[in-house]
Image (tube, rainbow, N blue to C red; front, side):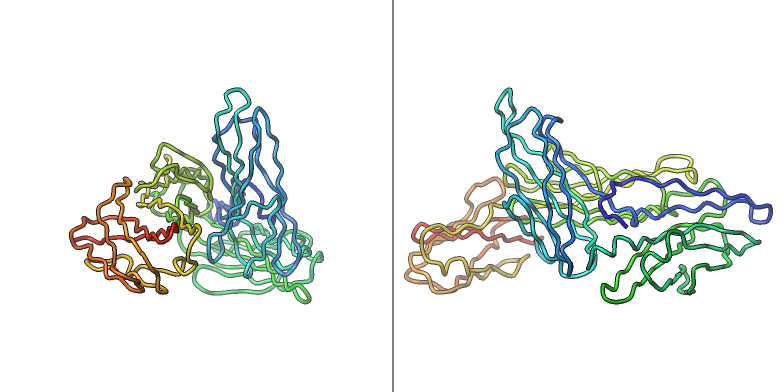
Length: 400
């Protein structure tokens, strides 16, 4: 499976049978992982990148950028596996921790050629980590080969000799079959989920999977039968990444993001940098449609995200960077602790940047109990100052 295919809907198979009526087989959207883009510059600035498999789940990402009517200033790579990582290297060399799908984004910062106004355009993709380039030849796909009453036979497609492998079929009730074909009797209209997994042998031990959804009439159903919406987000300072995890049971769909600051994006995965600190309402809207539905199904979910100043340590004692704050969230008391630091000053800021509390311990300090009982619920920034250095921490005050 090529993980760089853009989000799209594959054509479905329509088979008629006088005993069953009709059956439709839809590829699952999860098998067609896509990407997203956030365009802030002239559309002539095209941001893309190629991936090259190095082996052992190592990859090299090579940018493909056309500046259009802009002057490119710099570019930033962002990736997320266990943690969010960023790099300003021209090319991104990355080792993924193992098999799976990982978001990778390339952001290009530029100046408009006419107005010299700064702008940025980002492209994000889900990269399916493979152990070896030979695994690209192992592609899982299947179709319906026959229908006999409630029993439907599926057949593996593609060049089954390209990479030697074992074939496993799995069904929603937990049953499984092996072999290049599989016959199964279904009860009810569906949707019924069928998955095909190919497991290769040494030395690469490649694996490829695909799932599809089977419908056996009628032609109209409720949205709740098809949509299982959801998404995850991760943030670091003013940067937030989003990944849609919804299932639409194979039906066509579009994912829209509203970052709460007037910025919008589309695609299954996206990256956004807030221009100011604060609390934002991040929303994902999922729209799904298809011949099984009489109208478009719409689902919107929102979460609160907090954009904070990134942690920085200027000239001064390196020990300040080791300070932490906890627990987060908290109720009345926050413990600040770290290596012993002299001339420490503590400032607490709300999300508008207004200082709401200040504390200057007498003498050197290695632990401070910060009383936040008088503060309202919400997010705050704690700044630790010492000898020109600044350590920025995030705290969240829970409901009263």
